[in-house]
Length: 313
Image 1 (cartoon, rainbow, N blue to C red):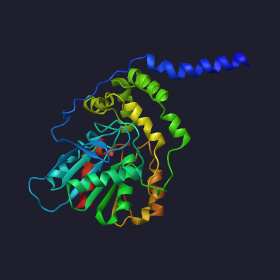
Image 2 (cartoon, rainbow, N blue to C red; image 1 turned 90 degrees about the vertical axis):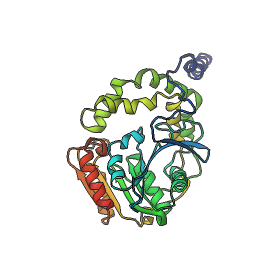
Image 3 (tube, helix red, strand yellow; image 1 turned 90 degrees about the horizontal axis):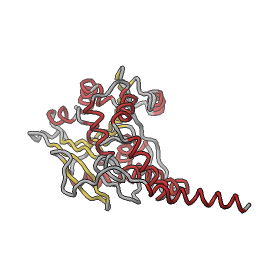
Image 4 (cartoon, rainbow, N blue to C red; image 1 turned 180 degrees about the horizontal axis):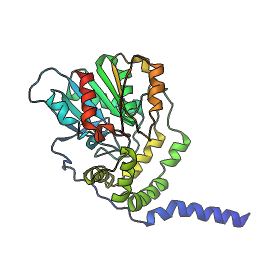
């Protein structure tokens, strides 16, 4: 028994100490740096959010649209849609949902759909008093769905892209497993492994090829890879494991028209999910982009933008 205890103790010591013996690659952005010409930063509920904003040349009352990224995405994910929306007269805001893109990587942030929805409403209200068109990709779909259910009176229209909003139930706090996943040694080990072996061009190219259902170009790979080089990105992502919902929300609370756009070759979230959703909520529109994968707004922008504008106009 004594030998077993010694082995267990030794393994625990290795787990808690060994990860800190390795260096973690990456950089810390300058406090005054702007990733893009349209970049802005705002602190909401103590969390620093990076967003980009475009205003149409002429105010014509088309309204404001908020673009919300999916898991591992950022404002970069909407690069092929923004010009079309702005030239059509829309005020466009694209946001990096923490901890992704260039938003905060800080500790102890609740990354649940309802918490993010509450935070993004505060950001949106600081930018415009209009009702908002809400568009979210993948994980972002659950966030904009929560936003629309939270404040239906301030929501003009809703767009889900290869993702859906499911009802949420308020929880009392993070689970024990979530706390364990987000513990210091686990996060440090993940930082070492991810920074040294996963955050590189070949692996991100392979990841994007899977998401796109086609080969990505170098600009796409670098656009996704660059924010992951920021220190503490992996630690912040592990914080998602201890997220908890702060409100109980139902899809039936959404009063605005809803459009779903889905890629027929999406292997990350199969299109069968969209079909089942439509059966349950037949008033929702579903548009399928043939041959597109999980990121139809990037790989098939002309078709995507056409479907989006048809719905908005």
